[in-house]
Image (tube, rainbow, N blue to C red; front, side, top):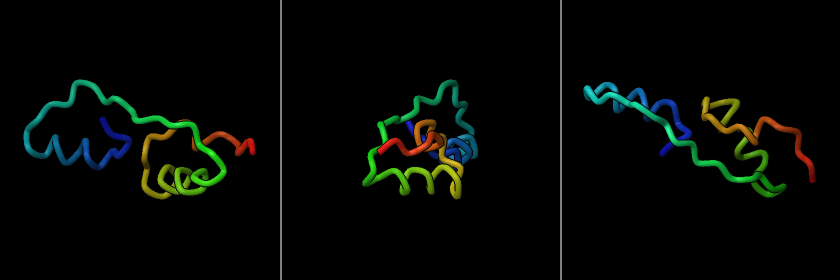
Length: 56
């Protein structure tokens, strides 16, 4: 369970085969929206809701 693609790459580097990635998804709120968006935009985290427009 991860949103971090570097963790998947790291595990594969140890010879493990990743068969599924289960995302950790939370609904962004105004207090964490920019944090989650930054993780997605700058670090490549696979966070779907952070790409949506802030609604509040």
